[in-house]
Length: 497
Image (cartoon, rainbow, N blue to C red; front, side, top):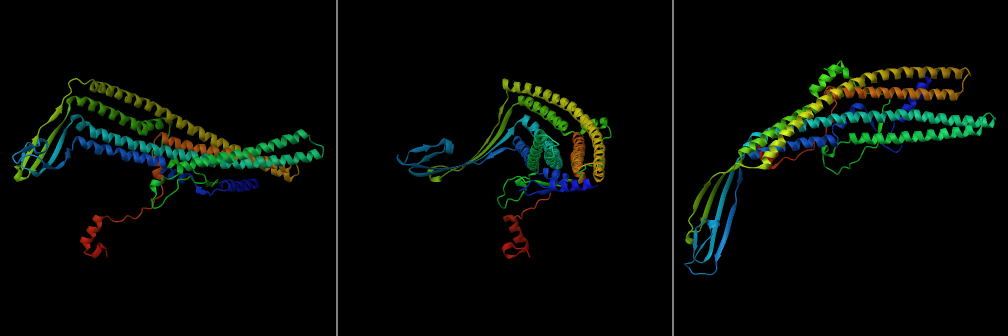
């Protein structure tokens, strides 16, 4: 029990961030929640919103192109007789001008071009919708991967803090051994070579402690990269620096258990896990959408054989001054422009390429189904193996505790020295670190099973793991809102009572 008290004190010391850093408390659930708003997730969300523009762009195959070109021309006949005439067919449509002085010509038009594109009108909108679905699936893929990476980085950073406890105890043991060898040399019971060996071991243990601290800082910086919240989610009322957090404080006694028993539909065997993965995996859904897009693109290229055209409608209004002989006229132009490809090698090559693209996407789907089945089976086997390893580490920790208790009793009976007890403490600390490592591997195996069966996002939803709520900045009412408030309330300035 005494040894456990010493180790708990070491836990509290090593759970803190390295010296000179401001630590922030962190646990598994908060790490996974914060990873849902990092830069990668926001990038995926922006990509999904960008894909929705394709649906709006598809309207160009249905909505006519309209333009309102306005032309005002001032003409001056500087030279010439009063009976001379000028004709400007591109402006006035052939209306002659007579006389000297300033002559005004005005032309107003309204043009509309109705699209005649069977391939675009049939396939553009379905392709855009399938593309949006694909981007949403990819966004879920990014969320899933960031959550799993955050959990892995969290457990790795925390494992290194446990390892630091063992490293510090081993360094202390090496120092005590050096002191003991020095005393034995004075008493003539040891050789100088033994002292050199003890000093070398002490130096090696110090280097190992430094290595653990360095690796811990690297792991925490990697974790900070995954937990950094994007600036786009923060109100931009002032300049915010883009920096990583300066370390984390871990509760080394916290279990951070992934309770998969609370999830409905969790597979109970390897076969159930494989079948669930084939039905639910996002990778399979994404490739199914890819097959649909490839088929739609094949139809689009084939329908281009029907040709592309437009139905132009032009309304023109011409006006010249009456003294110059230019009466007001109104003209309407109506016609069609339609091109039917007779021989177009590029069009036929695109059709052949689209057919091959359908076959390639189907092969990708078949390959993904095989990989998903393999991944789900491996995840189940890793979970079973991790459970066995954790049980073994529990037995080894119990053995180390009994060894430490025996060393303590021998010390009280004057049958052992304090270095033997310290060596037993190091062994117990190593056993505790190994047990925590096996526990972390078990939790990661559970998360991996949830990922392989596509239950990880469901687990986050059921556990209420979500990014923290962000403050919404106050928005000034627009001009239309102020005008409506003024009309509705009848108050000066549009102020509400």
